[in-house]
Image (tube, rainbow, N blue to C red):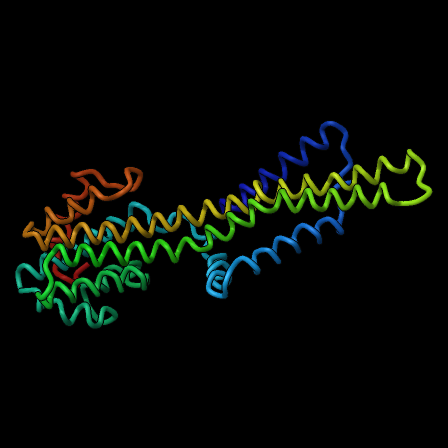
Length: 291
């Protein structure tokens, strides 16, 4: 929805300002220049990327409609789940978590958090490192290094569409100039044209520069920035899990461990100390599957 609102604002501002000074919209409709600009941009995109980059960019478009998935409520649920897992491991032994993490779909504990359970990336990250903690063969430093490598790999792969769309956005103004130059060449190379006929042809050619810049900075580059923000939100979720589990590995009690995780969050989504304490108290007061 925010993308649509932004695009409407871009189009409305540009065309509205153009019409205010007496411009004619029909002049802006230049199919040949649109073909040159868009076709060249797509061709350059394909030439600059391998199959992995192209597929990653195409797959990311449906997710652009998502807005605010990783919000304060999601983080509170995550810390509630982490608290319950760590509290159970502390009271019953880490081996008691084995059944929960091996089959989260049938775990009463995970069933309390359907939003988290439906996120395969978070579930895989959490359950994998809980398994390593259960094994007892790795210390906190080794697990931290492994977590850092996995988060870095995730970020690198997830930001592939960011770089590809940013490159396309950078190239669109240049392709607009190409279209404009070709239009000017066509106008000046046409034989037997009167001077009054050259003006409209050159004006039509200059639309190419306008379209290239508008498509770049009004449409494509904002998508690149939006994807980058979404990646940062997921990365923060993984870092929250990382900090909480490492605090527990270093001997801190579950309430203190989730406080470590709280400190890793963005200020806009971070609950206050009292909010987290209240949430942990409500989780602690009810058995797994009781909410």
